[in-house]
Length: 257
Image (cartoon, rainbow, N blue to C red; front, side, top):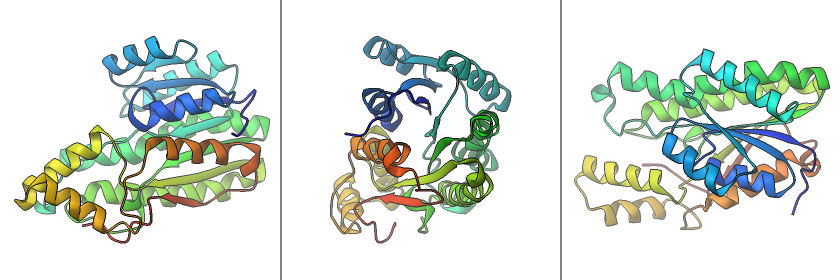
């Protein structure tokens, strides 16, 4: 167990999936946490189960909405020490020539631009106190090619460049910036991705799952709790000199097909 006592954390897309587990883990470690999410149903469920964590609705595609919600969360928390940029979507599973500009733009906006929107609001607060930790969610697709998922891969590679540049820019203010690169994570989104891949390739979902796991050295899926535990560690005093890193948690994904 790590301690995040007296830390104040914002988790984007924090009402479901990986974000939900991250928010609960940070809170369990002692942090005061606020989350935002686009889904009203997820927010309601999250609020009922986690009454000590305040949740806000926000469409991360809207820069003005992100600024407003970020400032509201920071006011509620009486400051901010940790930002977890978790919001993301899978995007289309198609050959590149079949992807529409709208599908490309949405995938990049949610997976990359939204991280910029949150950072530009939160960073001035971190600079004033000369401390903080930013975690940007990338993916194993942020270091490997990903055929038929080009907008997703392009955005996740962009997250790496954004992270490493921010780490250089903010280091003198004692602000640490790191990327976390999950592999194949158990959950609804991965189930949908596998179903779309099976459809595209004309194979069964069972065959698509087998193909997914054979390219992972440890031949296993990642549990969201593993990702949350890594984030809590990096944001704690135990990770006080970890910055500018791309931290893979993927069972060593060798290739993505």
